[in-house]
Length: 258
Ligand code: MG
Ligand code: MG
Image (tube, rainbow, N blue to C red; front, side, top):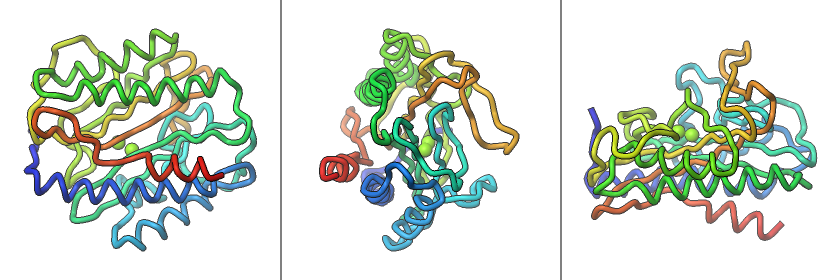
């Protein structure tokens, strides 16, 4: 069952999403060559708690950390570790926080130092896929129109769209109905209605769409070990149109000032 939110509830969700946005902005300030995932994880937990919120991933399904950090061929759900990032890496950072009893959940793929043009292109196109998914999140469309828009754009660039992992409804639980696949045919699934709140999160692979899971039980990586990018926003439908509750503004400001 989809839990549609009132405008008051959507405002509470926006505040939760903004804590995640601010936290990713703090990460953007420091991430670079020589930095480790565990350092970022500590910073994120402090930032979330400083804003009166609770880390949303820590302990959820027994996940051990505040952030999911997935470099290069890792798609999502990577566990932060002590391995320093190197110039040329891309690092997907996914962050969740609970504020006002609601979850915020969003993600950004950072470029470390000098990244090859073809990998930068993967990041750019994945971010565009997110924008196209958001644009399709409006009354008059159905849920599958979101995935259709994402898949069309990704495959036009020859990329693989991960099938097994999907976006999701978001609210007082992290994963609510509906599932929001990043692929699909037009005009399938539930009609999009006002009050829908979802996390849209294209996971786009440079090569094959096929994935594997590491023996840690968490980390998802590409089967061909080519890179993968991941961008995520929290989106509500208000007055028939998409409203993005999270923002990349803090990240973009931090990256511009580096
Ligand atoms: Mg996420
Ligand atoms: Mg999510």
